[in-house]
Amino acid sequence: MCADDIPPQADLTEAQWAAERETPPESGTAPHSISRAAPDRGIPATAPGQGAGAAPALRRRTLLASAAAAVAVGGLASRTPARAAAPEKFPLPGGVGADGSLSVLITGDAGTGKAAQYAVAAAARDVCRAEGVALAVGLGDNIYENGPESGHDPEFADKFERPNEGIDVPWLMVLGNHDCSGIIPGSGGNPSRGDREVTYAASSRRWYMPARYYSVPIPAGGCGAPLVEFFALDTNPVASTVMQTDPYFTWDGPYMREQRAWLDGALTRSRAAWKVVLGHHPYLNNGVHGNAGSYDGFVIGDYTSGVHLKELYEQVVCGRADLILSGHDHTLQVLEPTARSRGTRQLVCGAASKTGDGRAHGRTPAKWQDFSHNGFMIAKITAERLTVNSYTVDTAASRARLAHSFSSAPLLAPTA
Image (cartoon, rainbow, N blue to C red; front, side):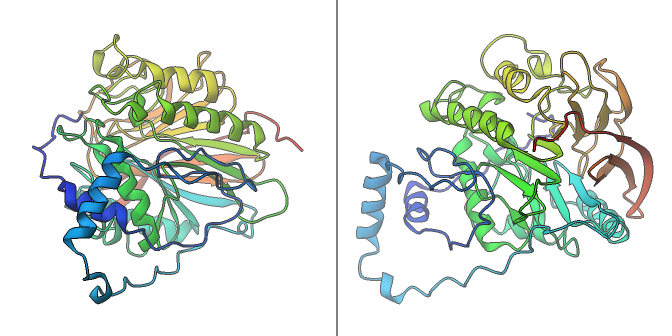
């Protein structure tokens, strides 16, 4: 939980919640090649080309509340205006640039709706146009401080759409702890709130979140091996600052078991030259929150320390993915691969609207790190090299400055 959290606002009432669950979101056609875990509970993730799985078993609370809501509004449905058709989404890149590269914008912890967010987005927009960026990544804490109140909350416009006007590409979004706030803002204590951000994806051209966790191979729809595959995780149930009370979302509950099995299988099946894991909470981090397993100085318990997220990264991701991209800490860090990460490199990019306290709190070797400035990163990917340019932003002038650049080769040879 961030030091500048504010008191929670009222959540949806039970009747509002039931009505929202009763009304399905506008459905779009998902790209066939995308692995997904359905946002509704009880539907396991499916691999590319497999069926969508059985329909979810609705909880008794859902059925009773929905029935009550239906009685309350009985006879009025026919007079309810139809919802507008879903907009045509910005397409996932179907190829690479003339030089054989794919350029990707990386941001995190952006969604305050304040001046710093708009300044960083304006600076990033200029760089994106110059670099031909075709894809963006949003690393969580998309709607501060409490997450959205529904899948159609006006905050989506104020804290995502308007700041990012002109960056007209798909944004691969992941859930942060503030997006899943419980009674305490930023606690990650109510993961079910994340379903609202999945719902919102149906009504946005930019926002891409087909499920709470998913993978995207790029180029999309290609017949050969992908250049890169992104694996977007929901890290909240194993990194919340409070204990999860819903058995479905406990650290060892069905949801995390399904997500772990999906991630393990998806990484095994991937034929991409580059494998990039997206998760709001970092594995390694020199910022104030610290490393997974000892977040914020906690080293005991199943939640606050992030010990089970540490296990997930070490047992499933490390040595199998080239990069872990995370936010959570409001800093910019390009950390070195270590023996414990088995060659996988951690990048922390959570300074799109807030900043750190100006000093390092950890000792993980770093190529470069900044704990004081707002900023973002641009990844330029070819089959042979990945280059990451880190930019700091003068928010008063909305101007970006290239602060660091590095490149590397893939960790593993792609499979045929």
